[in-house]
Amino acid sequence: MKEKIQFILNGKPVSLEVEGDRSLLLVLRTEFGLTGTKYGCGQGICGSCTVLVDKAATRSCQAAVKDVQGKEVVTIEGLAVDGKLHPLQEAFMAQDALQCGYCTPGMIMNAWALLHRNPAPSREEIIAGMEDNLCRCGAHSRIVKAIEVAARSMKGGE
Image 1 (cartoon, helix red, strand yellow):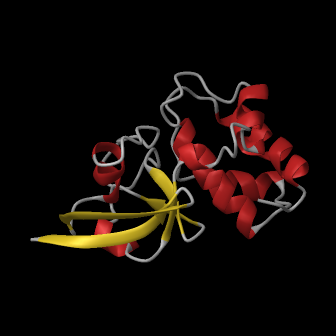
Image 2: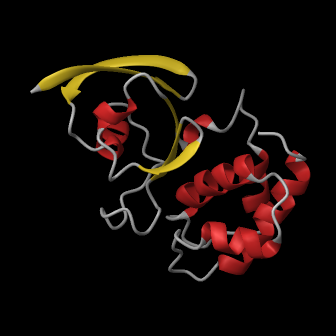
């Protein structure tokens, strides 16, 4: 049964009639054309589908769209402001923290949530905080370095 779902998406209020139990991932990709959020394992294990829901890293393949009713959702497309990349996006590029790039949006969104909780994490805290986001290309050391660089650049800001 379709439900009216309203939430804030990348800073703008949205409303749609949709089956409430559809995954947030599929709604983002098909209803809003936001394809930066990737389908990986479909089981919430790999992290490719990570978005922010009320500033918390959330596996969108496991979240029903009805669960974001009245909440704020941010995708990788919502991090850049007025065409200026977020410091995490800049750091990932500068540190060459990607190869194929498939996991990168989820990595960046998870890293954002990590830095929101802990603006000055140690290397060990970054590694632990990113452990559940998988990269098959093996760019983990560059990803950790990019997060360290972004943390310094952000200086506790978002």
